Image (cartoon, rainbow, N blue to C red):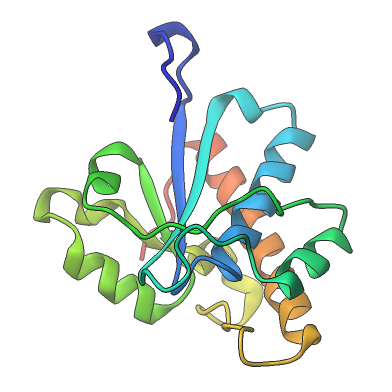
Length: 170
């Protein structure tokens, strides 16, 4: 997190959250970054990702996640896994859980006054047919592509929602 003056601070600070922060949440951070860059809005956003667990702290995203992202023109190799911290609830405007389990854990961890910031990412893709981005870690390469398909839908929906300033209700 960089030191910024009030005039150039981002409008939206978003944290993408999955279990270990090496598959889904780094891909979501990368996809959403690409979406806002494409729209010329990157200066309005501060983006990060984190995991509920500490198993992979400091590691780059899974090589399969990197390969799937690279197949779509995205480089997520510079990211490093970290664990969700209590300070994230104060700092970020929205914490976007990749699945119901992550959502429940984040909600339990969040201070009462910050629980409204925890959202399920796929709520921004109501036509996806699911509320969970499946964890591709124990599967094959196509699982990463499927996760990216869902993440792309949710990223577009999230940006539309934020630009309209109309949060999606749970």
